[in-house]
Length: 303
Image 1: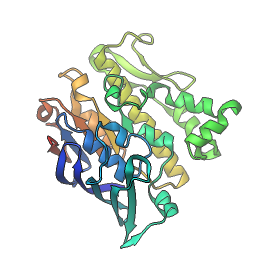
Image 2: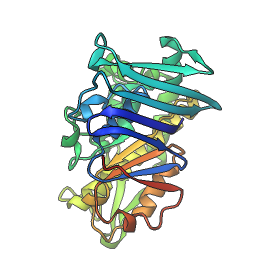
Image 3: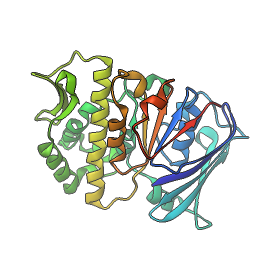
Image 4: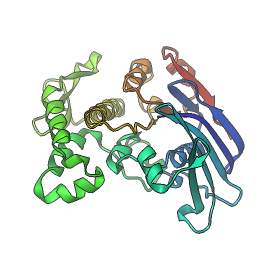
């Protein structure tokens, strides 16, 4: 799934803006990203982090428009005001000039709540900007999946994963993923490694597990776990034949890590997952951070 075009009209601080996306990585640079973040979530038919990511309401003059390519088909998505629906934002999806039914739209766009939640990298230093979204801890995700398979948790886990979490395929991929996981370098200069314990919990470890992490180390730990969790879901999707692979949203990365950290390898790992990536940054040195990153476009999103 690839968003090719997004248009936002009369929403928050935006009068009219249109964006063409031609690269796998799009960087929105600047502090005023809330409207764009929300619009992307709406046109993707996401259930989480839609209009609650911004202080601005969808009004009678507000409109979103997008063109989204998936499996050789181009879908047009339009959001317009409707006082009778939640957030007053009604979404219509068409393909080939024909309006899709709710069932067709769900089949084309919807992922489980768990997969959708995992597509957002919003760490503890940034998540308060996106209230009421709860803080994510990617270090515990796979361990929680194992717990979800237990009898007392199965009903809730099934609902969060649209039933796929209780399939034998999911369980097989989960066990293989955990057993095959190899330690990764977290910070080479400090001999800090990303490891996994027997329960499937990710850990930062040098000689022994570390809990006294700096902001940079904690951000890197969460980010690498975010990548690994999405790599796991990619394997689940491939094993089950599911085709809805939505873009990844990354926020609060550059300005929460030391300037000496090379951002390019971190973003290349995200692009290696084969999904469109949107990065939201407000650091003034973003051009220097991204110097070694190919296949990107940088958009100044000042409204």
